[in-house]
Image 1 (cartoon, rainbow, N blue to C red):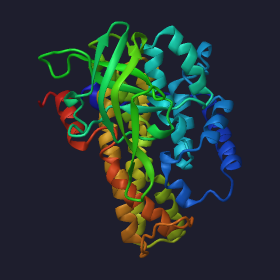
Image 2 (cartoon, rainbow, N blue to C red; image 1 turned 30 degrees about the horizontal axis):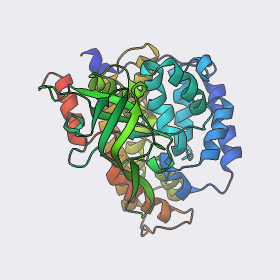
Image 3 (cartoon, helix red, strand yellow; image 1 turned 180 degrees about the vertical axis):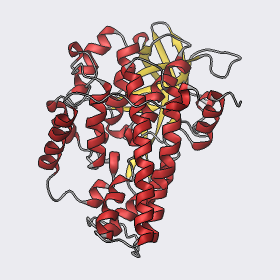
Length: 383
């Protein structure tokens, strides 16, 4: 069997248990006893800048970055421990999430020294937020179909186009935009990435409400937005390779299989200590799947620690993770005879409703199931 399919487990970290205990103690104190099942079911969509700043003060943002850029110079596996505990608790991490998970590492690799010294310490402090400029109307997860274009005009880039499904763009300071900057016969060629300050004139951010009527998605329009030449990240024309590396960070973490974990945790509480055989079997099956996904996801963190490219392995984690994330609320509603009722109450019915309304997005964000399986098939040599 090839290494692509083996997912070797990373070694245990000295001090890992101490770090985990520290994070749990921090969460218990910071979130408090009133942070219940419905709050937790928001998973990583909860937006709380003050919580992000508190994490920054703990040194738990930018953990793997060099200290000269505000980071902690710690390992990807230590960061994994912190992320896993935050997600398991349903902590409101959305403010800093994208910046810490993928935009910061992208700047660290492709940004200028001025950009790194200006932006990375603010991300690590929980004070600077990013959104993703990839998806477009009519293209979905097919990034190669992107039509947003930037052209050079002297010492500036002029950006035109539209991005959609942009999470928390209305609260973000920056977007990294995947766009066309040249012409190429290859669908993946002629693309670049630009760092866009969202306070720049010519940008319009319009809300898109989700099934629960909440505003965290947006459409972002660029109308002759003028950017400095230094907005280019990496090399012109290398946008496709850069964005594929970025997606490895987006697709591999525990956020790709723990989005429904708060509901599963509450389901176990509701079923009690003596569930019937069918309930025990169903919960055991879900727990087993999560254990396997955790092993696979941690192996990707191990590859990152060894500076290997885990793009294909991350894609598998994302696809399988979305399956179990969507199964959990469907199985839960068959085991507990309650009507899922949206509302502020921290009870099982409200947590079930919130997770059910969020679940359709789990197989869309970070790449649709069809796109991901095409990537996997190519990795296996089947396409």
